Image 1 (cartoon, one colour):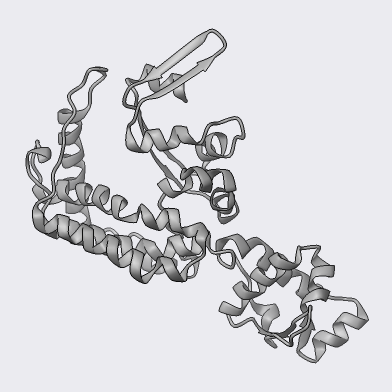
Image 2 (image 1 turned 30 degrees about the vertical axis):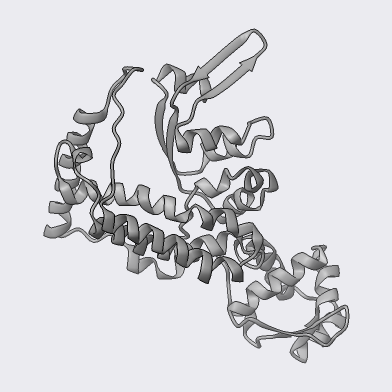
Length: 314
């Protein structure tokens, strides 16, 4: 990737349907996660391998990855990536499979006009900014005073009303959310201005407010991504659910027949660690499939919904 960036004048973009690039780069133990931080901030990066030296002055790499939940969980559970801040550079959005009709594209006259407008805008931006010149011009875009104040207020709200109540794992991502809002505001600004030289105009409060509203939506997705009882518990929750459906042991079946089972039995049946069983059960509790009864003992009572076997996770 570093060599490819050097060949492409230090700027690349990628859209992948299976997250191949994400898997190959971010989850490879040999890859330095700080490299992705440099791509995000366009800071200089230096690498020496054997007799070869590579210097990148202002690298950038934009990615859009459509990936399955189990792969996303590997990204957000990684201590290496979380510790370096690399995972915080990626904004997650989890597509609600149960409500796909709400997101299904329906072509009509308005949508066709919007697509035509979007394509025209992208072509115009490419003519303005695309270059293979390593010494390309760089532009600074400013926010007007009202837009700046909106950013400060948003950062303050995140710190005062969200960070304190969330696991420490999510703090780095939320601490950078106001920066993501400014980046998104630039994209919205380009749409609003519709000019060949959008960098000549300061970002207005309307674009900034729209970007902040979008980040409040993404905030819930970020919480889910880092929550031990959220995305990271998904696979174990599926495993527990399937295991309970397949009970054939007479003793366990007798217990389940009365509507409950204990957490230690679940742990023994699934071979999942006790802490992870607790997180997975909390995940299932959100869907009203179980209720956890803390009886003060090492093993909690788990009351199972009578129709749990009809439920299926995607």
